[in-house]
Amino acid sequence: MPKTELLGTLRALAAADVRFVVVGGVAAILAGAILNTRDVDAVYALDENNLARLAALLARLDAVYRDPAGRRIEPTVERLRTQRVNLLRTGLGDLDLLQEIGHAWRYDTLVPWSTWEQVENVRVLVLGLGRLIEAKEIANRPKDRAALSVLRHTLEMRRRKGLPT
Amino acid sequence: MDEQQQLDDDGEPTLEGCFAPDGTDLTLIESALQMTPGERLQAAQSMIDLFAAVRRAED
Image (cartoon, rainbow over all chains, first blue to last red; front, side, top):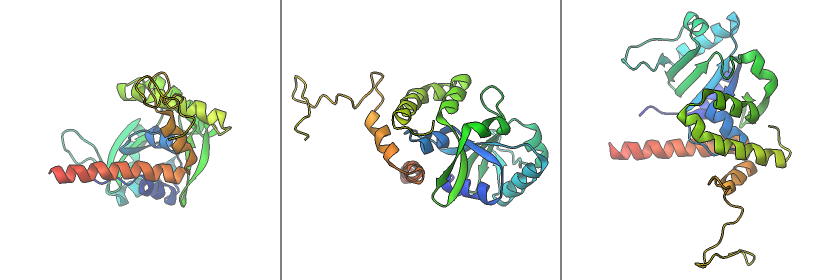
């Protein structure tokens, strides 16, 4: 079973100056929701400089697409530019790189809805829980529906405590 | 046990306020909200590592 290093993945992205917003299960966990997750989900900025930094980092991490047929397909600038969903396996674990979530919300749309979180010695931009819930309602996959109850209660408890949502 | 703890007909704690009507364990969320983001991520990482260790033991 491949290893998974959640913090290591975030640290690598941040250290490479990749512009990204953490979404999905890790964003929920950072907000206080108790969920099980096995990967890092991130929405990345689509400018050419960011794509180049991201592709270079992925090469260093020996990233490949999680291809059901077992083919070795490496992420490139061109693939990151054209593929909306990039489900990767890296030396630090699974990494899902997305161009958008929800109603076609891209990086620039997500930034105002996100907050900078200090996670040990790594500073990352994390999507707020309210928008994360909206995105999961829109995606409406079984795993999204299963998480919604915990996410909504976490949001309510954060509101009562006066924490960012 | 907390002296204020309410007991049900079977003498078990009622756990009133511990669970939402939909079954969500609110005490887990409360515990997580007491942690820093780094501690929350570490808790999630520990679960991943535990499952991986179990998988390895089964192989």
